Image (cartoon, rainbow, N blue to C red; front, side, top):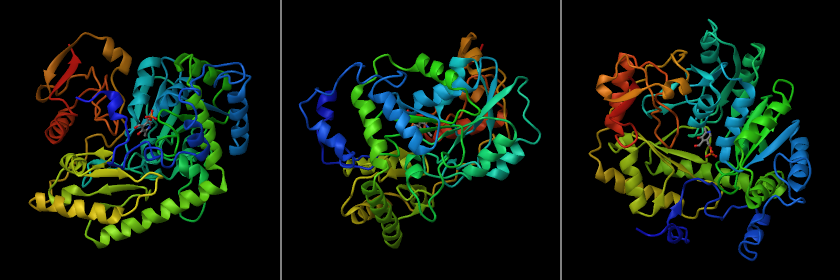
Length: 465
Ligand SMILES: Cc1ncc(COP(=O)(O)O)c(C=O)c1O
């Protein structure tokens, strides 16, 4: 096995995965210049002139204040623990222990961990499911309206709501209307826009709106998943009308390292500055236009793609040619292409912001070779999961994990209460949450998932003893 260090050396494989800077090719020019300087000279602590995200003085504080003003919000904080850390801080600022939050069923697992940390009850709201792709779509306004009528009753105060927009696969929600609907019910709204930073800096017809422009109270952007920053970088934007500033500061202080990397903080600043420049607009539009042309070229050559809202994410419909996305991923890897998100029925690649030459030809050749491997018989679709209505776990995730538990075969778990999370990663969308009662149909659905991806959905599950 090569050492980690050896694995970090440049290699010739094509990076169609996150982070979207494409192994440095699309990093902001000022950051690239910094990284060419004497190695390690930029690895600094919170010196007084640098400061940190929670300090009142220093370069970080002044960058955050400047960027918040430019983006038309009250505050922002840079994050060095990914969107994960900032989503958790946001949720814990919205909800106190013993309260509840509305979460979409496709919420990222970081939000479940936040519920666990804060003793918060998640109330799950359904999202559409694509049986032919085996994954969730984005929440719709009509769906949300139905979920809130009658108003879910978790037996405690519902303190806020979280939305995901766009999803990992790039499906966009009707975000403005969703936020308005939740605000009309008196709830603060945090939007997990980890995959949509670019939306906040793009304009033009047909470009989906960002939650920042749509009036969300808190928005989290991952600056490495949907902007060309270094891995782990993220930003939290805040409008203070519905979520108190002091609560956010305290929440961030609980979760953030006391030694944030100056390099990562500089990456946050430089990336956000670059996204506001005309050179970024040019760069982004060029990549987006190339992606649109690529999609047309691939379709012309017979490559089957599922439709999506973000041309920079391509969802290869491998099940249509009888190949699972997991096998297709191995196949691509052997041919020097690293994709992002393998699933039982499809394989998603992230084009990112680096320029790729000859990609249509290369992907089409891989597809043709892949098609020859399969028997051409489409794989069976994945039935809709049995969570198409709002659902409330019987225990909070933290209560469930503290109870005595035992391990059982999945097939024997009907009517038991889960004591662990089942969550394929990627995409990090949980299929089962600690504290949820496993109904018979849920048990059956999970077994079918286990057959499709046994490495990700275990055959043995911890349930309450
Ligand atoms: C929708 C969504 N939100 C949040 C995250 C967490 O982002 P990060 O890896 O930057 O912590 C992910 C990661 O996959 C995600 O897909």
